[in-house]
Every structure is written in C-alpha cells, then in structure tokens.
Length: 368
Picture 1 (tube, rainbow, N blue to C red):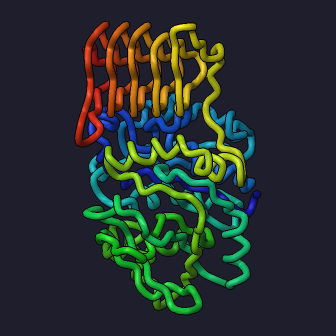
Picture 2 (cartoon, rainbow, N blue to C red; picture 1 turned 135 degrees about the vertical axis):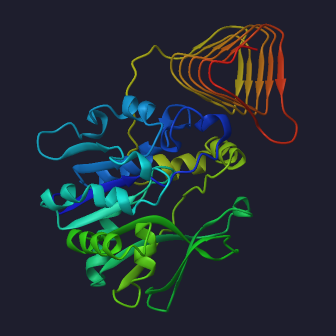
C-alpha cells in the first residue's frame, strides 16, 4: 500500500517489566513461545500492505535490531520502501517526549510519497485490520483517526493510560493523557492515522511554539481545529504494563479461543524464523495444557506453562504455571512454579524455584 507509511513508535516505552526490560526494549520482550511483542503491530502493518515502516527507538535497542534484521520475515527487505530504524539523534532528548523524534525524522516523511502516516506502538498484542481503519477514516472525511478499546480489564487498576471521550458521532471531543481509566472508559491505544502533511505541520508547530512534548499532546490540543474520529477496536488486545499483566496475558495464550482470535481470524503474525528440530518428548515426560516451542527436549513434567525454543527439562523435573524463555536448562528433579525465567537461565538438579503471591522473575543467564 503505497499511500501509507507506517511508524512503530517506541520512544515513550516504560521499563515496567522488572528484569525482563533490564537489557532489552519493551517491544522486544518475548511472548507466546516464539514471538516478540513488536511482531504483532509490525505484522498488522505489513498485512495491510504497508511496505515502508520506520521504528522509532530510544534505548536498549540492540536485541530489537537483532530480531528484526532486514525485515525479511515481514517482507520488508526491499529496494523501494522497507524497514527503517531511527535511533535518537540527540542523546540529551532521550527522556523527553516523542515530538523531538518525529521532528528529527521529518525528512523521512517529506521524502515519502505516501499520502498517510499510520503510527502505532510496539507493546500491543493484537491482530487488527488496518485496511478497515483507513477505509473508515476516508469515509468519515476525518483529519485524524485514533484507535481505542473500552476498558474492562481489572489489571488496569492503578495504571495510567490515555483516555478519550467521544460524542454520538464517534468524534473525539476530549483526550486526557496519563490518567487511571475507570471501567467503561475508552483507552486510546496510541495508534492513529493522518495525512503526512498534517503530521509534519503538527510537529513543526509544536517545536516552534515549544508547547508540546509529545505527538499525543499535539493531537489533544487540536481537537477543536480538526475532525478527530475514534475507531472502536472490538477484538482482543492487551494492556501490558507490569510483570503481573505480562504473566496473566501470556497465560491467556493457553486458551484456544484466545489464540484462535489472535493468530487465525485476521492476518498471520510473523516473527524471526529459527530453524530447529521439533520438540522431543521422552518416555518419562508428561505435558498438559502447555505451549512447547521447537527445539525443546522434555524428560520431566510440564503443566499449564509456556516453553520457548531450545528448553531442556531434566528427568523428574516439574514445571507448573511458568514461562520459560529460550535456551534455559532445568536440571533433574528441579521444581519450577509460578515463575518467569528469562533467557539462558540454568536451574541445578533438585533446586526449587517457586512463588506464591506474584510471578517471580529470574534474570537472564542466572544460575540457580
């Protein structure tokens, strides 16, 4: 789709996932056995035919670069368009809002022949039809279309999001930034569509006036000047902002109704391909209600858990209600329960790693 350029905006990411974001960006956190969080929004863009995508980064982006590479898995390794990484040019502005990142990359938008800019973020687990949003934007003759989801999630309690309010025609008349949503509030998913020329104008005006630190502030301040239409996304989407919510939504991937909607009802979700042998289940193994990625060797018991690629589970070991990331080693007779193990963790034979109240995170490459 040549008339749309995509942006995955990671500038305002928060490091709220404990040890999981100590050495990687939020968008590159592993999810559902073989994916990274950014895979979902990036796949949504390419499924809509968007063949030029820029990723605005802020920090800890080495693992993200390694995962995305040239963008081949998303059909973005091309001579015209493709995948662009945009680290911050001004190191002093890492802690400020994203308006400076958009300003630093205005040449990217000005060189593009695309009519629209579609901006989203890299931490939403969803499968959205962006073609439908573009068609609705044009049908409504809107200047800006923003995407929202009604809040019905108890895990948002105490968290802060951007909340929008609409009139009967789904026109936005108020956008409150950084507040705690109440049940039924419309949570803005930090995803919007507008003309490239309008985005350039908003960014230039914001920099010149010094009034706005973020593009969302600029949109909120322009509601009386532009027709800002709200698109209600009715499908599955997560609000991940804590270890507890990450654990809860990961475990929802064990529900076949959720995985059917997320991976099969709309477009495919792509990720980096790694060629490994199928998972191997030895005679001593017992596995129930779990996701097991390729390359695993299971000799013990796995229940209600998610195992990423290349996990080795020793004989007599027990894993329950846990998330085990790539290339972990679980020794014979070890017990793992209600735990998230980051990559390359090694648990010695007969060790016990459990948590009763909240999921416990074990940092990358830890030896227990």
